[in-house]
Length: 133
Image (cartoon, rainbow, N blue to C red; front, side, top):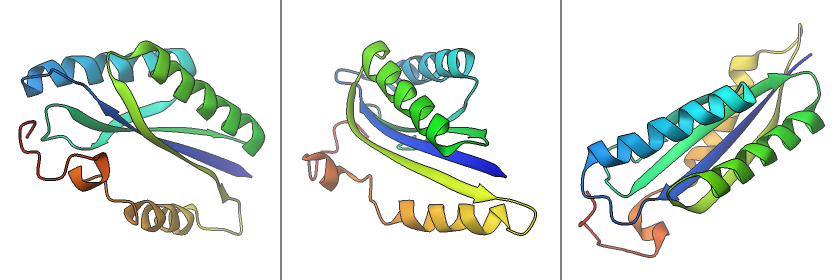
């Protein structure tokens, strides 16, 4: 059986004045997590905002408990090693697939679940703040 775990982390980079500065921080973080934890990593939301990024990490294996621990370690690593403030995080684990199940269906359920959360500025305690766009 295949088990997939997903971690979404929202970070705020106070003081960034350009997307170039933001990309430097995000690219460095994604590279370090990929190398250290052998996880897939990508910026998944907030790409057009200077001070905000939502990064996603995923891991696969056969034991949900192990994957949850790995995702917890990734979250701690991000919190301790990024030039930014972690303002939100969500672990979506486990997602299962086996010979009788369709992983795409499970992933679509997870995406539907994650779409319920809005990463817009109104959820970041700065409604109407356009300074970082």
